[in-house]
Image (cartoon, rainbow, N blue to C red):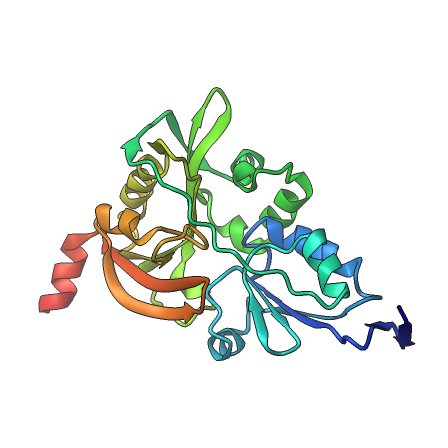
Length: 274
């Protein structure tokens, strides 16, 4: 086949590929890994990087509710973490199907030891990606935002092995199109999923108690049937979260809902009836 070079962009068999990669800083440890992977393809694909951390207007315009969004040729929206095989296929003019992650979720609670997630032990929490994420972990905790909070969430561990975890930030730092105020916390990620056990609820319960000292409610974005970015919907409903409605519906991939739970009823009642 013929390869035509135009500046640093390669045209394969007349197929032009462009990527716009939108990301929320290093909120997900995989963001750093994907950025470094994309840099290796910059001579083959036209790639633009967009950090939405301080650009809520852009996040709203593009309906972003994931820690990353990849848009190909200004048209195709891809949500799953990028891989070398996906980008290799893209170089050949092939866009691989974006398959949602919808594992069967165990409902039997299992609690090992629940400990706070801190900047010092975050390397263990970053095992949620299933990879050795040392570099990715360092990138995330180097964010000045996390220096403000001694506890980033809670994790469920056993024999120094991660079973599950949940992380949060104040809603005022969230670039998504959601309600924000100083009394609302936002769950960025809850993990891990297992077909037999529920390792997430014990962490979530402890987080809710911890946050109730400062916050009125918690918001989280959940898919209806999948677990990415969080989910499923049934899991949050069973944990007392109210469905505030659909945020975004992405054909053949996900339907995202905004879920809410009041965790400090004294504050909630005072505001509601004052």
